[in-house]
Image (tube, rainbow, N blue to C red; front, side):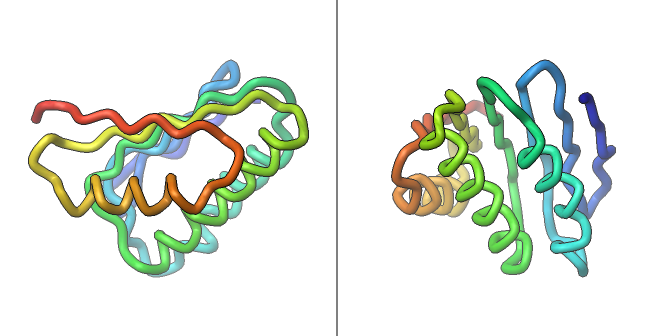
Length: 120
């Protein structure tokens, strides 16, 4: 299964292909739960190794909850035997996003999370 949700000024670009899942951009839509529902289905249905790449430069509170739900799902998949890995990239000068990525990482128990600082 491959999927693509094109991004906008308020929504991230979501892609999924060959076990690589990515969320890139900004996430501050009004109904985050509705936006992320198909993403949850993709993660639920995926079998086998999963590489998750996150490159957000902003998200609001409701998006934060949805992203955390996704990460908990991935954490459980990893625990159940599906090899998963999360790579969260943030811009060098974006301390807020670095702090958020560290907080998310610290809440996960099983899946490895790599934080990557990137130049603008």
